[in-house]
Length: 138
Image 1: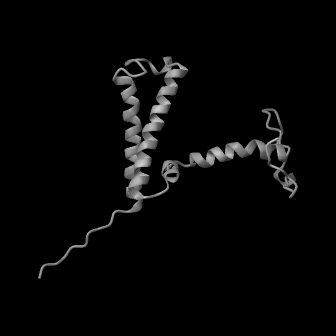
Image 2: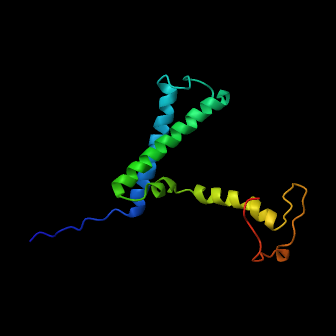
Image 3: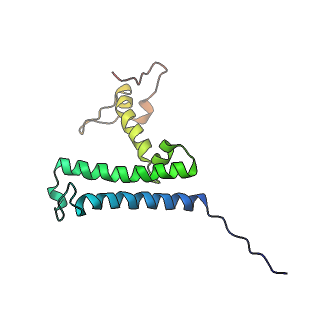
């Protein structure tokens, strides 16, 4: 009788890592395409000489390459497309960082924090959030 060998399973982290690499590769390939094949940016242009329009093309192309691969992953794995696009593997997560950046000015205003460079910080013990504190946009 011949011994059977168990086939190992690929971890979910390894699968996600492979998709992340594919998305990054697609973003880089897309960026190279607009430079190397007569695209919007002439080959050999020093990066410091790119104008806003050229930077816009470059950034949009990179994002499109990333998002299209992540959408492919969502379809292949039957998961939510928005979730797949947001799974960057970065720390801090850009989605969370954007939410925090949006909330901080409102929080500082509600807590009466002087955010000027010369402002002196109040001690943490003096902060309190009352139930009436509003974080709505003015």
